[in-house]
Amino acid sequence: MRVLSLLRFVVCCLLALGLVFDPGKASASEKDGEPMGFEFALTIGASIGPFKTEPGFYIGGALDVPIWKSDPLFGQKLMGEIMVGWTRNTDDVVATSPLGVVLPEIADLVTSTGFEVTTTQVILGAKYKFDKLGEPASLMRRFQPYIVAGLGINVMLGKTTGAPLGDLIGGAASQPVVLQERGFPAGQGNVLIGGNFGGGIDFLLTDRILIGAEFRWNATEDSRADFGTFGGKVGFLF
Image (cartoon, rainbow, N blue to C red; front, side, top):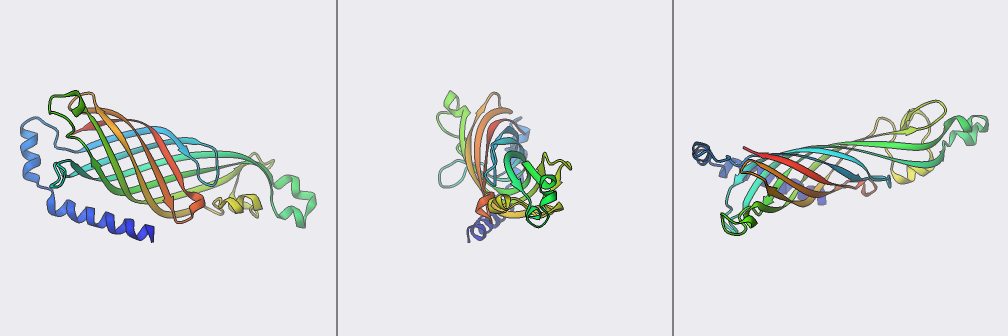
């Protein structure tokens, strides 16, 4: 149900983008030498791992497209967003394949002491940015907090590491029970649909360059695969 609700939200945002965005206004801003309202930002940081893994590395890039430069309710900025992210998480565990029960003599060969999961995500959503706080010329105007929400596709690939026979994908042998309980991807991995929620704050260094920080939570179809990302960012307005 939560995924369906997010899908409706994203569809509404896309309809608003097509109906409300006014190319004429964008052209006028461009003539004045001001950014048209588009933003691109690169975020680098850490991820709170899925499947009870340890925190790992995260990198993501987001393109924001203006829908309303000044919404009719609060006068703030609403944007559509396309984002691509990647995370890598690892953990150590003493895990023996169920094959060892049938063939005890090979138990040592299929015992793993670690595993790794990488997640590639594509997110389609919306960002609501408070970009008109304070007077136009004040320092407060450069601080721009925001909230985001969207629908994401998460491609999760997992493999065991450290086995005597080398790295094994989850489907190379029967998966250890401890990894099954965590929901660790077997075979060639999982594709999970989910929601992306979060927020952050940007600070405008210039009219076209920003720095900031953000946190996002990714809720998936399988709650064991839920994960969070956070980090610092640098962005450009154009």
